Length: 105
Image (cartoon, rainbow, N blue to C red; front, side, top):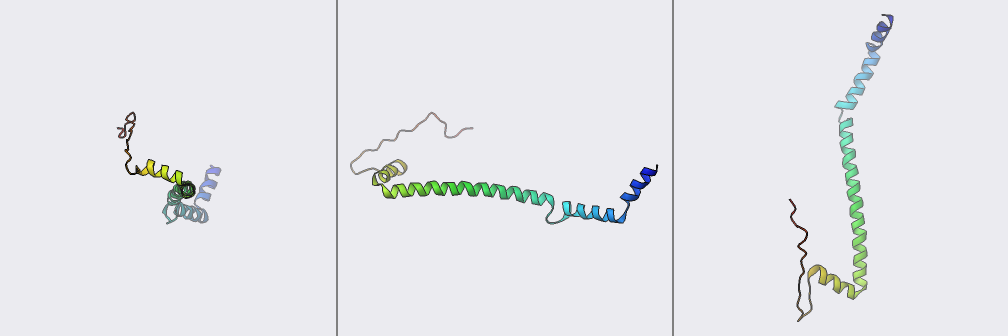
């Protein structure tokens, strides 16, 4: 019985109640609560991953641009493959792979 009275006295202490209320306020009700901070951290992680992806794409495209500007044969091949360009008097035949369904359900 004595232990229960000590625990109850500690739990009803004004400093303990004030500290507990302050912690509850910070965790759940403040504008920078844990839920909001967690959502913002997840968003930041996603944006950092997106940034890394785009930086990698920029490096890849910069390398391709440099190669295309240095080599006219590679530029011609790129134009033919990507933009279906052809020389005058030349016929162009497209071979389309139909094995893969472009609209999977």
